[in-house]
Image (tube, rainbow, N blue to C red):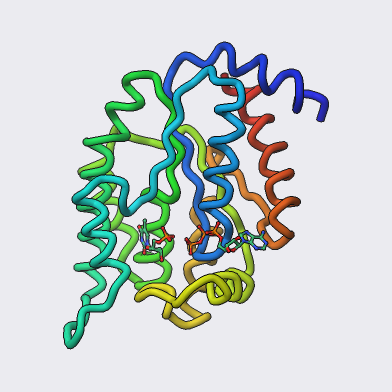
Length: 225
Ligand SMILES: Nc1ncnc2c1ncn2[C@@H]1O[C@H](COP(=O)(O)OP(=O)(O)OP(=O)(O)O)[C@@H](O)[C@H]1O
Ligand SMILES: Cc1cn([C@H]2C[C@H](O)[C@@H](COP(=O)(O)O)O2)c(=O)[nH]c1=O
């Protein structure tokens, strides 16, 4: 695609409205690596302000909630509904404090996960009804919709292998392979026929994933900016 080098940068000159870009995928799919790769790509041209965020997290309150979500508390089980509501509390805080104001200023947001994660993890993984999750979404996030979501699709065994190499697993990562198979299945169901989500094959090595992501991103940019 020859739009890659010339057009990618010339298009950025015209960026004036803020854009909300979300990177999704199961644990170990490479989301964080791609978020920072995209930030670098956008900043090279210095024509827009870019913030990378993580959901849950990225505000003081949301980071405290993130800690609760990711770490087990001795002798007390966390109910799946509690998990969902904590995640939504962190997301509402992040949205009101950072995402909405930044977008209003015309800045760009790259978010490592957003509402689709709840449909995949709490819906597909924990089996909370889609209706309840969508109700929270429509009650609290109704005007904040990603302009585009990139879903990094990886085989759950590969994703888990990558995170096992990196660090000790947290409360959610300790779930079974079958849990992640169901989360991936839910992602694939939700993005099927969704024109605002682009699927990237994340089973390849990181350089190849970055190259393919860049191609898809540039092509989206050319059509949408
Ligand atoms: N395509 C890839 N091939 C091999 N290793 C990868 C690939 N993508 C990421 N990794 C490695 O896997 C680990 C997890 O990557 P990264 O943090 O980007 O993923 P993530 O989806 O954000 O994970 P998590 O959800 O656990 O935070 C890192 O050590 C990273 O270098
Ligand atoms: C947003 C969101 C996240 N989760 C889970 C998925 C991950 O295991 C952690 C977040 O950690 P990461 O390193 O930032 O990927 O939380 C979830 O279950 N539901 C959600 O909506």
